[in-house]
Length: 232
Image (cartoon, rainbow, N blue to C red):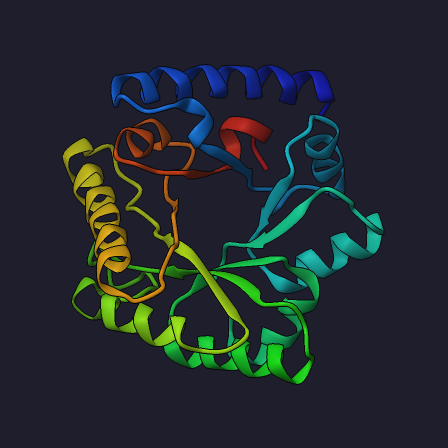
C-alpha cells in the first residue's frame, strides 16, 4: 500500500460522494469518511494520517491494541470502534478508542457509563447501533424499541450520544438499502424531536458497496474499507 495509491482512491471516492450529494441536494462537505483499517497493517493508519484523514475504524479491541502499541502516539487521528463490543472488553476499549460506534444494548451503555465515571474521564463519545434491516445476525436495537433505548442511554452519566449507526444488508437490492437507510434517518429525526436535550447529528451508514445510496439518504459518515484501502 502506497500513499499514491490511497490518494488516488480517495480522490475518486470524494468525486463519487460529491456527485451523490449533488443528486440529493446536499453538500459533499457534510459527509465524512471513516477509513476502515481492520485487517490491514499499521501502515494503513500511517497512510491515512499522512493524507489528512483524521479518523480510522477498527473492529476488534485486541487488533487495535496491537496497532496502537506498534504505532505509538497518533496525534490528529481519532480511533473508532465499529465492531461489536463485549461488555467484558469495555474497559480495554475505552483505553484504545476515542469513539464507540457500536453501542447495541442498554447493558453495554451502562457498563461504559460506569467505567467512565470510575475513571473520571471525559465523556465517552458513542453512537447507538440500530437494526432497521431486521436481520437476525445483525446487532442493534430494533426500530420499535430504539427511541426509548436512545432516551435511556442519553440519560446515563459519562456518555455523549452523537447519533446513530447501522449495518445495511450486503445486497445489490437498491430498494432494500434505501428502506434501511431511510429508516435510520427517520429514527434520528424522531430522537432529535422527542428526546429532551438530544442533539445528535451523526448518521454512520454506508460502506464500500453502497455508500453513494447512503449519501443520497442522509448519511454523514461513511465507513470505507476496500474501496479506499484495497483488499485486505
